[in-house]
Length: 165
Image 1: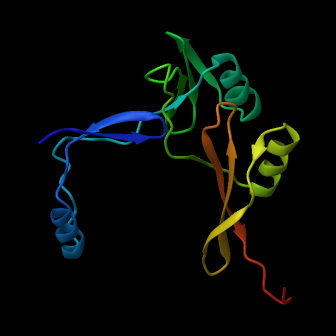
Image 2: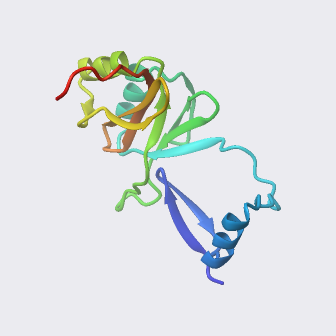
């Protein structure tokens, strides 16, 4: 089998193709996949940047992620249970782009207002993606200076719908 390259949040990961019928059979049977490789939790996420100083100002200065250290033209930030690494793309002539990084926030309205106040490119929203008994899960997408997609994610108390609109 030939390896497949997956792009996930700007990081290139090598994987081996898997036959979809095996995955579907496992899902239908409710089987738990064996962790034969011994993978643990995700430790680090790479975000490509063309300008490390702008990335440091954004991730540390605006988002408030503590800068852990810099090495080899990369900056490493503490993002809770994982590190966020901002550095040059794998190939300078073709930046890598990927999925979105979702940051938890206790007050999505306040966090969104602060991003706007700081001049961050905030996209339309927020978007309600889940409703439970007394809460809604809101997402607010925004972009870093290199155009990487990021999101705030937080639960908001559900209001009783007494008005029509």
